Amino acid sequence: MTTSHAARLLTWYDRHRRTLPWRAPPGDRTPPYLVWLSEIMLQQTTVATVGDYFHRFVTRWPTVEALATAPLDEVLSAWAGLGYYARARNLHACANAIVGHYGGEFPEDEASLLALPGIGRYTAAAIRAIAFDQPASAVDGNVERVIARLYAIETPLPDAKIEIAARAVELVPQQRPGDYAQAMMDLGATVCTPRNPSCVICPLLKGCRGRVQGIAEQLPRRLPKADKPTRRGLAFVLMRKDGAVLLRKRPAKGLLGGMDEVPSSAWREGKLSIADALKEAPVPANWKVLDGGIRHTFTHFHLELAIARAIAATAGLARLAPGTDWVTVEKMTERALPTVMRKVIAHAIQA
Ligand code: SF4
Image (cartoon, rainbow, N blue to C red):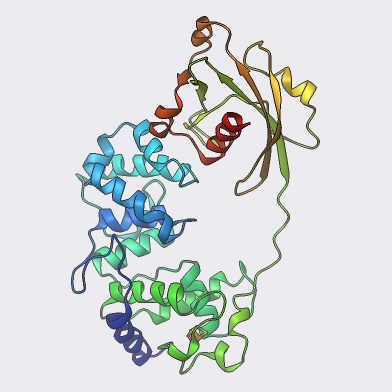
């Protein structure tokens, strides 16, 4: 892309930029706290979903200092439903590092940003470009698509990443690099879309090799993904007569670390033996295995859970084990309950 291409993109951006909850008005720079928070939330999640969460977070924790001093449980609970919960734990750890090491000011250089929890190359570049107007190349999935099409890069992803990154760096202008980064993101999200790109209104139409060769929509190519395995287990929904459900906290590290869950048998690949799984029940009770179950997809596997339900016989069950807790349905919105567990409890209540 020549400078005139960058200029065209910026002219387009001045007219068609998206209004986003975290984005500063034209001419202003978005504070690094808001850039960072929105970018972490947007990983693996759509703009439409993130909007409400973003509002909730900045209302409750308007500064990085406020977020750092919040209990982790409250942050995990506010994050519940956004998925990929390691992001929330890293968010909290990162806020603490910024307050602890940098007095609450985000560092501006790449090496310092990359050393912070949960900040990878893309997020570091986005913060540098958008918050500090540095000529950093922020390449997310949208930008990857634009570049692959612009240069008709036919190497499939992920192998194409190196070439795409190199091309992207060449394109970054010295003037208004922050607006340029956001313009590329907007172009990918609104014009150079995965299907039916709107080439006729695209400011990069002239000189787009993918378009000239008639292959734009097929790019970027991808290597076929390996099928995800399916794990299966039995979830145990133990209810008190007042409707409270027994929850326990997952270990701090690993999948859904630190989140709440109903107890369950181990999640294993292969056929589920209900008789064997029932031996893993948290307490002896009159367990009834419900019809149906739930299915949930994680990054690396699908999960199918059958669900067993029982009514707790005595109040003494409240003292089951450390880390377990009775929670009423009304109070569940305050808990760090991941989507998969919300599905399980909803099924158990409705069945
Ligand atoms: Fe994408 Fe079409 Fe623009 Fe090329 S001309 S960048 S394919 S929208």
